[in-house]
Image (cartoon, rainbow, N blue to C red):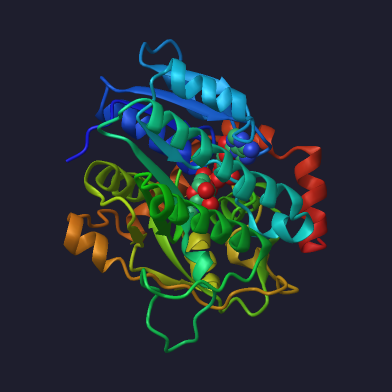
Length: 355
Ligand code: NAD
């Protein structure tokens, strides 16, 4: 078992990163946690507000592509682990403007790897680990009867987002094989839960239903995704940081394949049940099919047997429970999401859905 005590969390003000930081600070209060986040449109300091003033926590606003800042943080904070979440993460935005995806996801990951390699070589770090948090989308798309993605499925990314994540995965892999840098890659399916930016499917549906806007569903709504509650992802990453084997890849998934249209209908039912002041009820009247996303992957399914059998992780939250918690969170946290529906967001929204 490896026990890093001083962790740099990149992208810790984003959705999964913030959930991870809150989880880690709660679970391991003695560990020092440094967040490095550029606070792009997707980063939100409010996600970490509950940690203000905490002794073992520091927030640094900065870019992972800034090599001298990264070098300086690794040295001054004596970092022994990097949990790398920072990324441009939204497929639709990668179609509208891929530049930032290549810059942050590929060049940013490379910058961190180079800085950590030097830091690791200069200081003999016993517990060093570079955890690269990636996606199942690098594996491409599945037909209805194909077996789920495993760690040996060949990469076949189809969007600029997944291609940029695939590029970063390959660099991380190469740093282990070439330099022996202790790296681990995790490829996880779709996450959902508190603090997810409104553009993503589940918050989008909850928020639009609350404000009486149409609920846009791509194509025929038959695309299939696997869904994992974000805290189960955090628990999986905890397991991998402590017990994962360097040079390995671990798939993480919830074993919950759901068609988009079924998911949206479930969310509508939950909203009807839990929300008292819906402008339109039942909410499923708001469902509107829109022109499909270009290159839209049909199906993702992930086999996480390796993580389950080798490291003993299991998802603990059922999709029914997780969705209920998530809908309730968006209902109770209007102050969190309202300010995010900015002018920039509205412009993006109109471009993507033409609504
Ligand atoms: P997010 O978009 O909510 O958050 C990304 C964070 O990274 C933001 O806080 C943003 O400010 C920060 N960031 C972006 N560019 C940066 C830069 N150049 N330097 C420093 N910080 C920068 O993303 P998320 O959904 O929390 O995803 C986190 C990671 O998990 C990503 O690497 C993503 O590929 C991966 N992942 C996400 C999912 C999912 O369902 N959301 C599933 C599997 C894997």
